[in-house]
Length: 314
Ligand code: 13P
Ligand code: SF4
Image (cartoon, rainbow, N blue to C red; front, side):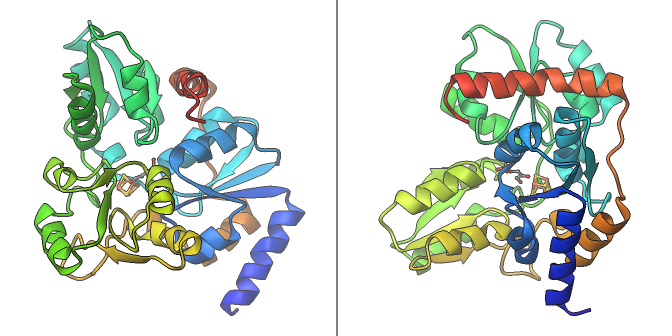
């Protein structure tokens, strides 16, 4: 079957089964093209809560599909490849985190959405990179906080809010590996370019960035900034949307390993058109969770969505 036949079959099956495809910005272009909604993790979580369909096919990584199931448990939620994990979620296991939390009983727990349902269930509030700063700023100044699992995002939020949140020692393997030295070299090569970076990047890199923000915030910044070249320190999948919205602008990628001139998340790229087709056809692999876990993990996510609405972020 050639690519176009495969794409047409996916679209037909999607209609027949009343399914909706939610696609993260880091998915391969073909999947973004077929998705009903493409967005960052905050926008997709919001979509998952309200979407009207029988099946949600989540083209992203496991914690995102799990979040969709938690928010809309009556729907069948499919993930094309169950191995699509995330180094942040992997770095924070339930038993270890429970011990850490018990050592700091006077702290509230804010967890970045890139974590398992088990960690969410142990959290008071969930955040995404799109709302973390505003959510933390909205809390009383004397509130003690544990922030998990991303020490780079947590460190960045500490630096912009003046807080001293206690950080879990996890990193995104894609963003953490990008180096400030490479950005500085690229800046010499392209002196007029602005540097945009995701807050999962390490602190040294964030220091040399002109703009730090979530995928959605970077897209907004690029659109409104009167500059023709951007150095992009995040996962390369986002370039598809950046180029579509700004055909006249040039985007320079940052590498995170010697074999590639750009940075790709190997977990995100596990989803392929073939796996998307087979998962829609066979309605598997499916995200299955017990009701108790759904209920416990849901509370801090709903709290995040409610506060985000109050603050006008979504
Ligand atoms: P966003 O929250 O910006 O969608 O990012 C998710 C992610 O996995 C970043 O690496
Ligand atoms: Fe996780 Fe990093 Fe991949 Fe995002 S890019 S899914 S944070 S490993």
